[in-house]
Image (cartoon, rainbow, N blue to C red; front, side, top):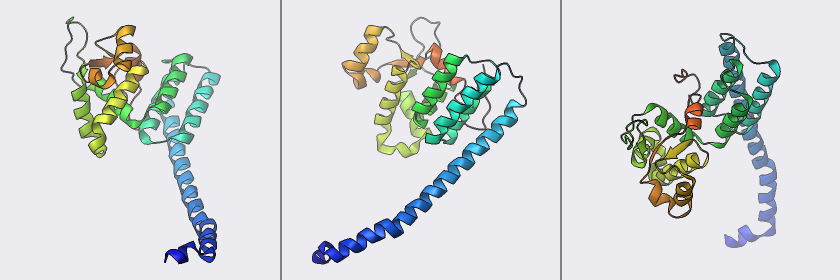
Length: 230
């Protein structure tokens, strides 16, 4: 059998099949994938147009067109429902004049960069009830790492044995991007958190949405869901 596989004739046959039959199969798979993506984006735009018809336009055509172009460019790479929900909310915010140009670009970029795990955690930090009340008695309750981990375990059970590592990665990303802040909120503390013992310290921190995170979280909804309260 090994001699057969190594033979020149077998190798030529394998090459022919790879460039012919397999190539055709791959082409069909790609065609179906592209069609599904285009159908999904078309449906998204149709729903968006319907939603915008119920709002009062408070932006100029150029601003809206620029935002739509940026969203469409992002959906070429990723048009999952979680992402489309956020993109749709951001475009509604642009249309109604809620978001300025700088935040529009930032929110679209963040949505493109984040995975669905990040969006799930942001929704949890916005809507959940944190157990850590802090020390000043004024700041809103924050969340312990273990609470975020437990939420992801329920919301995304497919994470399985990767739950701990994914939770750590997501929390680190959200801190790095300024979406959440920890009890240690100085630049020195963030440097310590990231560079000395990121996992050990991260698990001990109570976290909450930053001011930027609260602004962004308003638009982090699933496609077809109602907007988060202002």
